[in-house]
Length: 378
Image 1 (tube, rainbow, N blue to C red):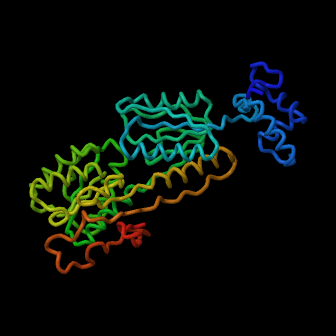
Image 2: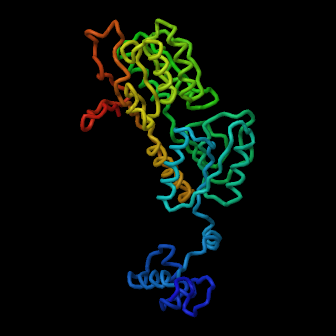
Image 3: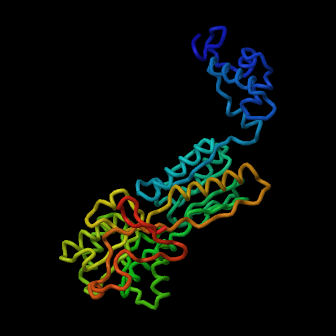
């Protein structure tokens, strides 16, 4: 029998009534099996599933949506960019959404389009999504959705641009991660830490700058003027050439790894040793960070953990609209200590605490590296 042709051999798409006839059950029983309802015996469930497989039957999702009032789909609004952070977070969201059994609808926005957010949300609502994830990491002038969104919304790492009956947040904590990176350099003995910031239209760049500044202020240290890049290695290289001219620079916290790598290249070309003269910490832990020279100390972003927690809370809100939202928890802080950081030259011998003995802020703590790998703060 040709799969999907039905018992009569015609090419019409098989229907639930065909499955019921072949399995010897009622159409209602077929519906119960595919909706995972109780009170269906294992034997009946087996017969229905085998009949559906033989016929090539697939549920009519549109009809199911009309019956249940839900499409079992989640929409995602995300900035169309290949940058490591946003792209990795989107991949994490895609994996988690599919694991939950929901379909995914993704709409990309374009940097510089203030109407992009509203248009993206409208498009998803027109598709009947049950919830929306907003992963929009930049602030656009005039951005925002004035119309009320009638489904739960999960916002990742930014203020909410929408009005909805329920707005959940996840992915906050970049300021704490920046504090941990800055604290690590101070504990190595550096008197202050310079900052290579990301573009300030990005919420993440602001959070990292705020965490760096707050840490220096809390320790009573001088706060040098930050140097702003654009997330690229080229902008880090340009910043590094500027910082190399300042003889007082002994430590730099860069807002992402790409800029940190460009920074190290510029410092090295200027005759400065990393970490012998200047220590450098990045942010993200991109795959190449462990293999550059020197291997880069950096803050690893918990993309999968953020996606897992955020989507769990969003799906709970969709499926339990009258229940209280699930509580949130801060993302883990994971400082990966490699060899781009060390005590400053004046503290080299002996150095209080020594290389690789820093501890992180809050409840972050050092764990021994597996198999001789890099030490990690978690």
